[in-house]
Image (cartoon, rainbow, N blue to C red; front, top):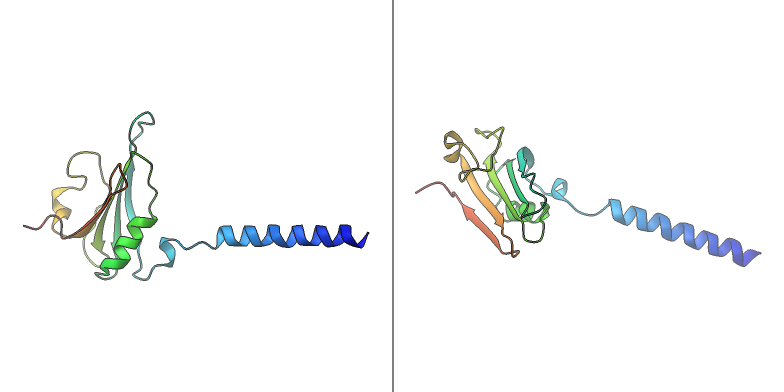
Length: 132
């Protein structure tokens, strides 16, 4: 009888530990820099490559934190994920689109970085992507 209660207690402790571990994983909310997603686009094509485009604001030019933020964003095999970063005290888009530029021309100068993970999982991080 004691063995039965001991096994139940062990299973309960393991279940609680698994639940806690699942919900305490690090994510973009744990990064310093006050990241905020301000715009998002995902194509509706579920038969082809999935394209995700994000616009996010950040408190400062924390380049490594921006790259980590991009790494936290969802990515689908053979899909494409792009994140455009803007300073939180400057202009940022309220909408991103599927066209070639993704963000309107009025916000391109205020874009401080672009993160992209392509269909093969290769990551590209560019500082000031629209400045010449």
